[in-house]
Amino acid sequence: PWLRGEPLDGEPVAVFNGSGIISDPWVLRDGDVYRMWFTLVPNPQDPTPTLGIATAESRDGQSWRTTGEHVLAPDPKGW
Image (tube, rainbow, N blue to C red):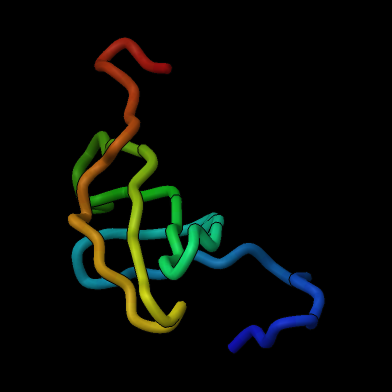
């Protein structure tokens, strides 16, 4: 795991979380809540998977809650 003060380097992270692929996380501390935005492909086995942005929240930065739905996604014509 990443520890505060350590550099963030290396390969980009992509994780299959059981309901989709998440990657490119970006975290912001907002008062006593951590907010994360990340790229989500909800169904990677779909012949035309939809790539979009989803969010999650955490009180401790370790356990995250998300709906697993896009908050920003392209329409059928694209971005």
